[in-house]
Amino acid sequence: MSIRLRLTLLYTAILVLTLTAFSATLYGTQLQSILASERRMLAGITQRFAERPPDDHAFEERPFFPLPPREEGDPDRRFGVNVYMQLISLEGQVIHRSENLEEVNLPLSDAGWRAVRTGEPWAETASVEGERMLIYSAPVVVEGQVTQVVQVARSLADQYQYLSTMGRNLLVGSGLATVIAFGAGWVLSGVVLRPVNRITQTAQAIGIERDFGRRVDYAGPNDEIGQLATTFNRMLTQLQAAYQQVERSLQQQRQFVADVSHELRTPLTTIRGNLALLRRKPAVGAEEETDILEDMAGESDRLIRLVNDLLALAHAESGRQLQSEMVWVKPLVEDVCRQARLLDPERTITCTDLIDVAVAGDRDALKQVLLILMDNALKHTDGAVAVSTAVADERAAIGIRDSGPGIDPEVLPYVFERFYRGDEARSRPGIGLGLPIARALVEAQDGTISIESQVGHGSIITVTLPQAPAQREDSGAVRR
Image (cartoon, rainbow, N blue to C red; front, side):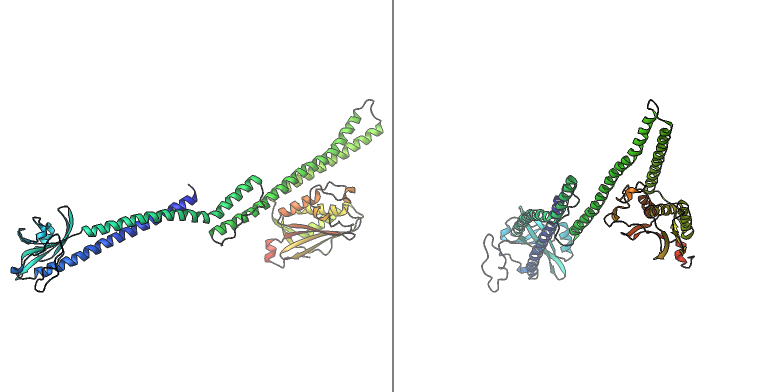
């Protein structure tokens, strides 16, 4: 069952219950009002009759036609033809009755007898000869004693006919109102739920077309439906970003596999060719064999470096948890500079005036990052390399500046991509995995890495890491 139908049925059910309660209340109120009015009229008649002298209780009511206007001195000619009177003794014997009663006796219940014997009037409804009547009985009191009972009855046929007509009208009117309300509720619920239908259609279209750029078109008020449309559009925006990220990841994965295959093909092809030369008959000369073996050893070393770099990159991007400890930057940078000088003793590497700030990170991973960056700087410049540190906004920065040719602005956005190497870098050793490994390790420590470069003026790579919590609490824990 749809929400639209459930809402319409619920609205209609509430309306039916309301109309039923209203009709029942109106019917009951009208019935009580009619009975009360008739009871007051009959009480007035019996009161006047009971107060007459005992010898003047005469009945001159004529049946089947209205009585003529009351004449002076004739107080009894005032009742209509549907008013019936009867005078009975306390033993229940009929003393007098109006002519329109003929031989019919007006009943009096046991409760009525108990009431009139105590001097209280009694009113009740009863069926007389198949006709519903309201009977009012009042005691006739003479010298403080109840001697007789006068009963006045009036037919309720006209009143019940009126109530029956009113009940039918209420029933028909309620039925028509229910039908109209059902139709109106169906239309209104359709209008209210139209944005929900658009959301459903949009979701179905997105699922079929995989078009996360679509949005729900809603121009109504900011009610519950409006908030639903806004939330759905916001969710689509997030899904679109996630989908694009997955697409980029898949593209990078495909590109990564292609790049790895390309990088592995060359050394493997070289090794395969050299093996074929060694197996050739007649055998190659001793000098040529030595060159082949050196070439194979070099390609094997290249394969080992490639595999090690790929493993390092995979570990860095696997989301594995690195240690978070207090690492003092100054001794770590000095150690990296010392190792770099051993690799290139003739190169000027400056690591002076360092701020010894403590950062929260993994010492081994941070050292690996600095070695990668230092090696990258030494490869791309023949000049000096300078390392500096700084502190700002509870974060420590380590900068490595070279004096090389710089990086073209069009190339700069791609330097952290796997296997990417600019035209100038292709003439230098390396496979393009150093900077991606460095970025992955830095980001695993809640840090950032960035590069600034100007053609002809060199480049500077900056690593930023959060300060250690203990040092943030004690701003004086900075050593020089």
